[in-house]
Length: 92
Image 1 (cartoon, rainbow, N blue to C red):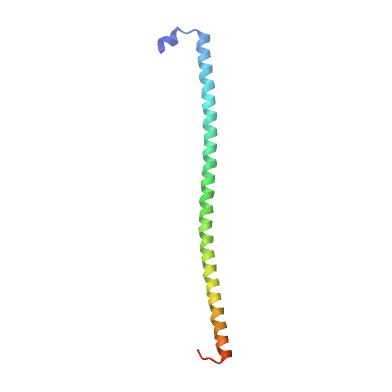
Image 2 (cartoon, one colour):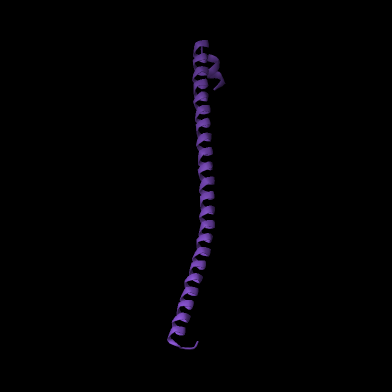
């Protein structure tokens, strides 16, 4: 490779340098673009993790709310049953 470079004319060497510089600029730009894409994906993954955590927390809230509603309904049913028995004169 060195011997071939030594045999090249100055304008040919300059042309090779120009092509290498252009390729380097393209690679630098591609690297910048890929880093930006990676950062964007990291943000998306982070947000997805936050959404999943929020969903799990909300799920816990909904479960607690459902239990409270179930207890309330059971309490109302017992109260209603008790009142019906009292009205009919039955003892518990």
